[in-house]
Length: 61
Image (cartoon, rainbow, N blue to C red; front, side, top):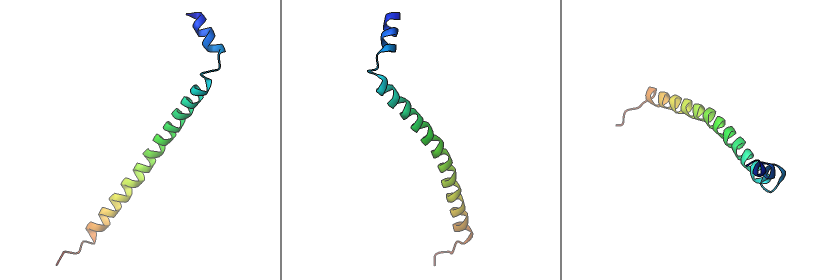
């Protein structure tokens, strides 16, 4: 088992794949944090729009 770990540590074949995986995780976390902030902004926009529409409602004639 230790031979397997030593071989994996010394070989660089899978290094690119690991770097891409770490980059993907970083991008995913950043996107998730950004979506949370974006969702709050959209929610506020819809709340404000519904308030304006309901306050200035003109009945259909």
